[in-house]
Length: 308
Image (cartoon, rainbow, N blue to C red; front, side, top):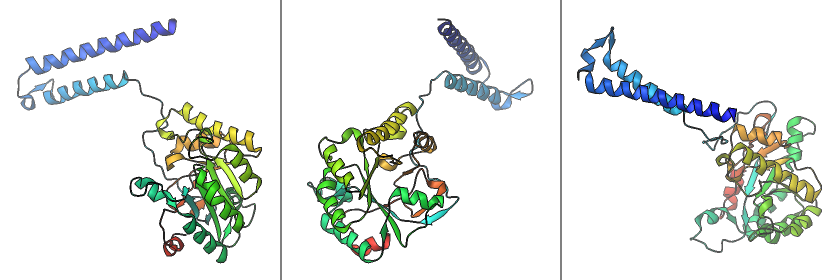
């Protein structure tokens, strides 16, 4: 009650101040002469007085306007590299399957890699001496606790779509390679997504490391910090409860993040996170927004080779 009275008193003070300033402003414009640049009041040009009044009005109005506590209004921040650095491409996939509406859903056209192209790309990696590693292994390399293998590479898949289970997983299992899949936990079991039984089946193979991708595939910078924290921490806790293993890495939906979100991810117990900005140098400085290399649909093998 006391706090409410204090708040009301503060509002009244602001209102009185605005009224006084507006009165002075009206007086200045109506009653003073119309050639302000030629007149001085106590040695000060009238134009400067009027500008001061306008500035005061704007400042008072700004002070009385509440500002929402959001993560940030800007979505993309690129961290600076420092500390130990290593050249490791992290590939980013979404759909492994043909677009059911080609030409009509252009975004999906761009994200859909056919199973045939996907298998061709993986066969190239295997036959050319690339070692697919997990993000945990990449983190250990950056921390200096394990040596890097020859030609290390990380394969990541965002969103947990059903075509990962139908199309990608059989190829991964046949070629015996290791990949990472980021899951929005609240969408698993709904249309177009894998269900938890499929996730558990894949997890039992030891070939796929499932990691967190929020609960609802939320665009985190548009949320309050409390909402963002829930999306981040609860997705980790859900995966750990279902899979029974530590969940150490996070993927920002849409690749949007900022330093405040990096801090939330770290405080939630993750040891690293990936974004969608392009790069291949992983370092201690970008651990909470590591770059990846997007693999779009329809990419010829020669172009795939150039990207990695």
